[in-house]
Image (cartoon, rainbow, N blue to C red):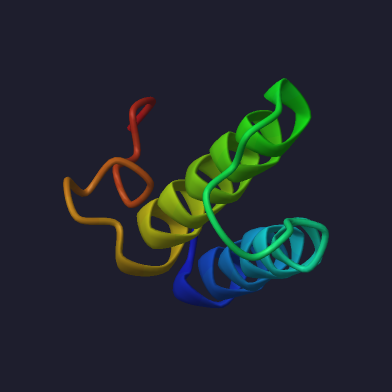
Amino acid sequence: MDVRQRLIVGSLWIGVAAVMAITIEPGVPSTVGEIARLFVVIVALFLAVIYVFDPWDLLSRQPFH
């Protein structure tokens, strides 16, 4: 996966995190739904970091060459 594709996918995950973040009420999450939304935001941001920065060189490897 080249850098351009990684940036596109990373920005999509940031968009997912942003959309989910605006649905969370300010303050400490008290219901299961709010905790699930917070979990989705955290996972989406984690995936965005993986795609944008590729810290362990997972996406740049060519496994079949």
